[in-house]
Amino acid sequence: MGDIRGLIARERLFIWRLKMEIGEILLKKAHEAMELAYAPYSGFRVGAALLTQSGKIFTGCNVEHASFGATCCAERTAVYKAISEGERSFRAIAVVSSGERPTAPCGICRQVLSEFSDDMAVYFCGSNGETVGTTLRGLLPMNGIAL
Figure (tube, one colour):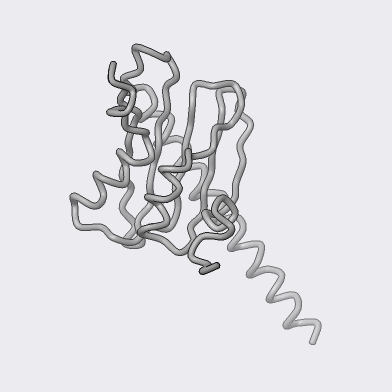
């Protein structure tokens, strides 16, 4: 029994390390995307990196517009790029912002992500380096539940 518990513990550690490595790769790609943001009105730059089930990474940045409603968040930019390339299933997303503290995806982005994933890893990081890791279900706990 001890051997099985040890094996399970090692497997959990391996999975945790793998998730951390994936998160770090996505955060790096999201940071690179953030540098391309078009944010002349708010100055608040955001980048996102989306990992698909097939293993591809799509990046996006926020694109502001004088008509604020026409602005597109980095998360949705990444999703729309992936969808336009035929991807329909996502594993994880990382979001990096120029704000000091980590910035979670907005409500619209959460809904768009939930259209294509029952649950996925979500990482977000601010300019101070603080990183938060959660799941889409953690951000939308009542999603899909009929009331």
